[in-house]
Image (tube, rainbow over all chains, first blue to last red; front, side, top):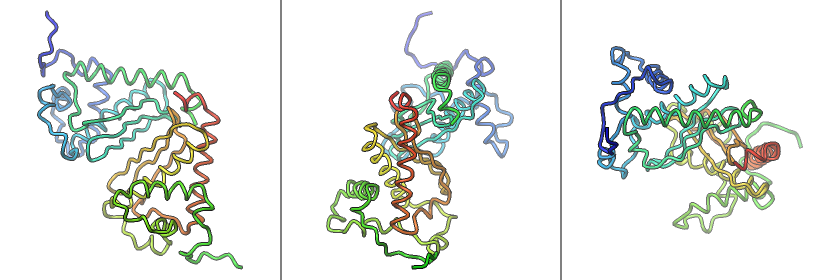
Length: 158
Length: 158
């Protein structure tokens, strides 16, 4: 197999294989008050998180960020918060501060410690090239957060 | 003089007497791109931050929070960030995460440390009974933030 940059909307990874993707699906199902997604496969539920480079280019960043995209960003960081709780036992909170132009901050914090800190830009185009990349990014941010919590345990418990 | 709970929209404190109120005025003047407020007295500029209990009761919390109120909340916490920078030399950032219903978070952070953390509710009614109370609250939050930065200097520099 050659490594290419071609778009691969289909993916080999299964949600069941990734603790982060499972946490993300859980976030979305928890907000599915009307049961619309009840019979959907996990992979289908995560499909909107997969956005190819081509698709990103086609999304305008001039307009306001739409509430559905904002909801996806929130679900992503809440899934990281849930993973941090699983890994460390610390309660984690999420704040998303987004201007209408799609710029801002995403923070996940425990006590007085910011475990995960990301600046957001062009948030209208939020998404990853594949489920694998989505899982990898979620795992990476979770791991960084766990490291900070272990490094400053006192601050995370204030 | 007797202490009463009556509304006192006029106030004895001068902006020049309070480092916090000066920082707050500075925030607002900095955003006054068209010079609308150029000839206004500092006390007049801060008038919308003074909201009596009676006035608060008259503000509905059913609707969305309006952008002007949100701007005042942002100015308030940015003034605290500016004060923290003056007191500690640390760069401080502000995030405000407000739902349309007026609930949310205000955080001021330095590095990975949350120096000031407030949950917001009924943010539509944001304001203080007098300039004195506004100054006192700003000073209190600033002092708390300074204490956290002194307690966890390492985290505030990450």
